[in-house]
Length: 145
Image 1: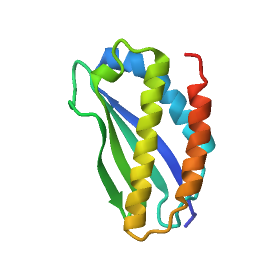
Image 2 (image 1 turned 120 degrees about the vertical axis):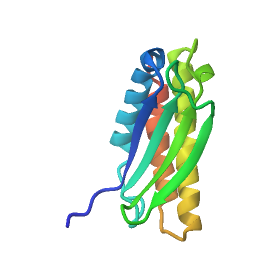
Image 3 (image 1 turned 180 degrees about the horizontal axis):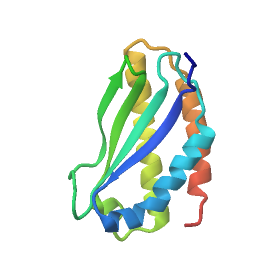
């Protein structure tokens, strides 16, 4: 069996074409920078920090905002959390405003994941994870569009 490196992944469930058009580039850009900067392992017991954007649109909407539904799989060695993005956070917003909301959401999500792991008495290098995230966030927020 090979040991995987713990990673931070970022997926999205997008509720419609307009939401996808407004958020696709900021989402993919952040996902790429997390893959570049957030390379673990951050915990011997967690292989993946799986973050999921739930972005409201015309077809599907959750009518929620922020981080919810933190779940942990001991067997599959991951921790996941949903980051809800209401329409008001992307519709009519500049790309930079969307990036700021996304970065803050990921920051909050990782903080909650670390807090949960510590509550479970699971070893986690939360300081290094957050430091790596802040490097990704700084590069992300400097982007022009």
